[in-house]
Image 1: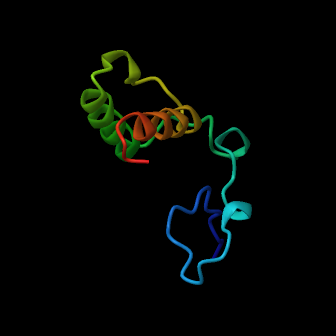
Image 2: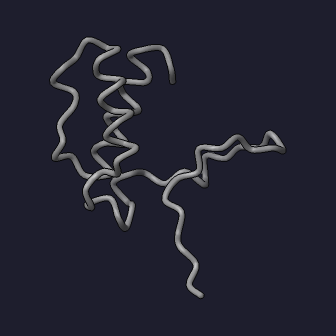
Length: 80
């Protein structure tokens, strides 16, 4: 049985300690150049509509690009 490497940990740290050392920059993801997931595409489309930025959604983004754009839109919409 092989263990799958988790690219990002978005869950809260139950001990309240600094989790910054566990968040990997999307540019450093081993699978970052793969096409974005269906969940990323759906969330990105929703956020781009909420932000009123139709150009923010691009179906050809890879996982890393989608993650960075989602983070930016979350901040722009007050969700991040």
